[in-house]
Each structure stands twice: as C-alpha cells, then as structure tokens.
Length: 418
Ligand SMILES: Cc1cc2nc3c(=O)[nH]c(=O)nc-3n(C[C@H](O)[C@H](O)[C@H](O)COP(=O)(O)OP(=O)(O)OC[C@H]3O[C@@H](n4cnc5c(N)ncnc54)[C@H](O)[C@@H]3O)c2cc1C
Image 1 (cartoon, rainbow, N blue to C red):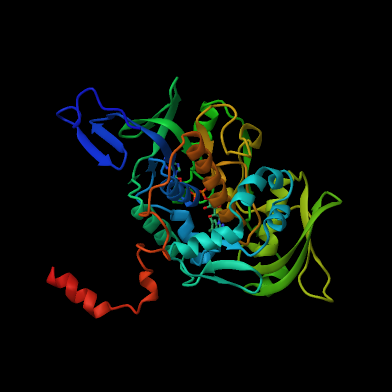
Image 2 (image 1 turned 120 degrees about the vertical axis):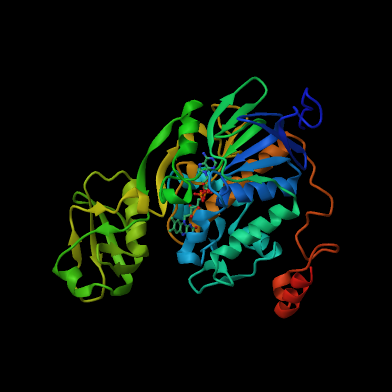
C-alpha cells in the first residue's frame, strides 16, 4: 500500500497531490514521491486489459501512457473493425502460433481462452459478432467501441491513467522500482511492461519497453516485420492492380526449400502484393529467419503460379506485428514474470510474440496481460473489491446502456438544462 510522505498527507507545500484509489502521486516540479503496488506501462491492448484485471482483482495500480490517449493501435485494428479474437479452441489457436510460441503462450491462453475473452467483453458491455470463418468483431464493427469498453471497465474500478507520461527509465532497488517519466517519478513494488512492438510508431509503440528491459538485463531478439506486404512490380501486377483473389495459395521458399504454406486473400496493390495469405507468409519468413526468401503464389486454379524468387518485404513500420522483442527465455510462461528482474512482468507485443492474422495478436496481448496481473494478485494476496466491480448482469450493476433505445433528444435537453 502507498506510504505516507514524510511531508504529511498533502506533500510539500509547492507540490500537486493527485489522489486516486489507493495511490497518491505527488508531482513537484520534475520529481515525485510515494509508491504504488503496481505500475503498468503502456495503455494499448495489453496495458488496458491488465489495468482492467487489476481492478477486478483489487490490485491498486497506475497506468502510464506516453500518448495523449489510450489504445491508438487498437483503433486501427482490422481496418477500424477490430478483429478481437477467434472462435478457435485454445489448442488449435496455439498450434497456429507455431513453435516456440505455442508452448510459451499455452498457460496464458488456456487461462483466458478465446471463449472466455468473448464472454468477458460481452459481460463488460460490448456485444460481439462472429463471422463464418470464426473471426470475432464487436457487433458495431467499430474498434473505438473496444477501447470504450475497456475504458468503461477502468472507470468502474476508478483505475487511474496518466497520459502524456512516457516512461524513460526504470531502476530496480531492494524493495521495488523507481519509474521515471519525462516529468515525474513514482516508486512501484512491481512493474508491468506493456509497451508494444515497434511497428506503426505513430501509435506510441517505439521500442521503449524493449530498451527498458535490456537495461534491466534482458536479452532481445532482433526486430523483423511480421504481417506485411511484399514489394513487387511487373507486367502481371500492372494488369491486375486493384484486384483481389480470395483463395490464393502461397508456398514459402528459403532458397529451393519449401518452409511453409499459407492460404487466403491476395490483394494486388500499387506497390506490390498484400492480403492475408501474403501477410501470414511474411510473418513465417521472419519467424523462421529465412535467408533467401521467396514465394510461389497460385492465385487461381488452372493458372501458372507467380514466382517471386528474391522477395523484399515492406518496411517494419508498416507491419501489423513485430517479430522480435524481449526474449522468451527471460520470461516465465507460467506467470509472465521476468526471470532476470524479480517484480518485473511483461505482456503483449513487447515480448517476442507474434501471431497470424485473425485475432491472434490481440488474444495474445489480452491473455498475457491477465496472466501477469493474476500472478501479481496472487503474490500480493489482494482481494477483489466487493460488488462495485462486477460486470453487468448481476444485481446492483449498471445495465448496458447501448441495449436501450437511445434517447438522444432527451439527453440533449438534459444537458442544456444543466
Ligand atoms: C494496422 C494494424 C491492424 C491490426 N489489426 C489487428 C486485428 O484486427 N486483430 C489482432 O489481433 N491484431 C491486430 N493488430 C495487431 C495488434 O494491434 C497488436 O498486436 C496489439 O495492439 C499489441 O498490443 P500491445 O498492448 O502489446 O501494444 P500496443 O497496442 O502497441 O500498445 C502499446 C502502448 O504502450 C505505449 N507506450 C510505449 N512506450 C511507452 C512508454 N515509454 N511509456 C508509456 N507508454 C508507452 C504506447 O503509446 C501504446 O499505447 C493490428 C496491428 C496493426 C498495426
């Protein structure tokens, strides 16, 4: 629990004390005092879910985010529709992640299965829909509703978030950590790093978490693009630009050797080839460290395959997922705790974890976040709050507003009457 500052309840006279449930943060010029049981760094998919679960498990926590808002990458997911998860059974999903990720993610995904994930979101007020091919989206098909759902849960638990707070360093001490942001610092008994990968850096994931982990002694796997297009040009592409082929088959080659196959959508773009079949192929090329990657693409029956022997991927900043990051060998799969720095935990894409398209990456981010916080809750013997925090459907909880007919004109009248 937070310590009292030696200066007294309000802190030093020239300080601003921000008081939240269980946490007191005192900002004084560039410095800060006080401590919190848990600091979660990064308010993306993993950090938001971690903070929600901290609320559910009664773990006082502070969420720090470098951007001015939460979930910037989540908002882009699935072209703004957000493919949250999949209807696959946990073991089928794990098999698709492939070696060594299936073994690493097994405890997290078995503890928070795609079915439980769907149940959690629906119970938290986000109606979902499932497509014929087993993908799960919010029924509104709006990624913004996923961020809103997570934010609503945080509000229900009075979970504090501090925006515009890029963490610059973490120092491990005898009893915990000092987390230094650009403008203040806070002491934490435990830290959860959920800072994402390094693709789409404008969303805030710029590799800070990997740097912080390395400074604390963790090994990093080099970054490669995953789920990205292939640069290509030529007369075939010029003739087919703008076209899509729904059931393309891609043979992935390393030199002469076939190292994998994918099937799915092929999209002919101005700059080259994209679509699910290509994205999944590039992820495999990166994950398997192919030295001389190439592909053979059968885009339609009875057509000769397209051969791209020396392939160039689009840049990492355009990739949907980063292959590489904090080395799996330095994290316990059973707890998401660092095996190098006691008290440090990881969740989401900051870890060297990546999956194919189809909701795998968000499932992994949510599941690893929950496993980390469950571990922390057990270790700290925290008890969940009483009734306040229960998702709806129970007595005393708020009903889902979205299910009621929207009384827009009334609302406006009420607002203007205020
Ligand atoms: C275009 C696109 C579409 C995608 N679509 C899907 C999809 O439909 N389904 C799917 O499963 N996956 C999808 N993905 C992948 C998915 O978005 C990511 O795997 C997932 O968001 C990773 O979650 P995360 O919380 O680990 O990282 P992020 O969501 O990247 O969040 C990391 C957060 O940490 C913050 N941060 C970073 N450094 C610091 C710091 N020093 N201090 C404080 N905060 C910091 C960042 O600002 C950011 O908010 C898509 C990705 C992209 C780019």
